[in-house]
Image (cartoon, rainbow, N blue to C red; front, side, top):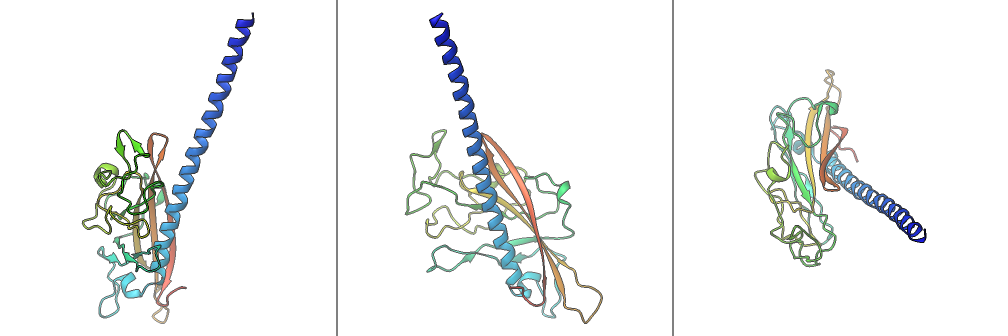
Length: 249
């Protein structure tokens, strides 16, 4: 009887331990997902604020007569601000999509609709790399024998984000950016980075009254990739604002 009681007690203790472990693992997954969501929202809001406050010619692709050229995709000269105040911001442009922004309910997060221009971005989220370079090896952070923070631990966007359509032709950063001045990488994103896809539409919302100030709508959809356990998932959100001839501060 004593042996049976001990075995039952051990069984109950194992069940309780497994339950607590499952709760802790789920809590960590939710926390990591929340961090990625907040970071993606902050980055997207930063792009939006830049567009609200830049000159109208850059935002709306105005010709020499001051007429917006919105019928074709063009590049908005947004910047990536450096955390080191001694270093200037680096170019981090966004290409626009043409036409009417789609209804969010019709979009599958992670899959680009036909005709939409992707702005694929990768932001360093490594936690334990050396202070010299984000490409430096970190032997304590490995997966499948691959050192996640090594220079070789990069992949192509096509492999990383199969649902995207339009891949960047130029890079806005490299894997050798320093930790004090990290730069988003568009061509060789790191395995453990935060991966985002940004879609931008600039639309003319001006009325027919010739005396009214010209008003333009800015629509920004952003999707981010995150890990839910061993699974790769995608989430999406959108931001909208308006901009007139006069910058909004």
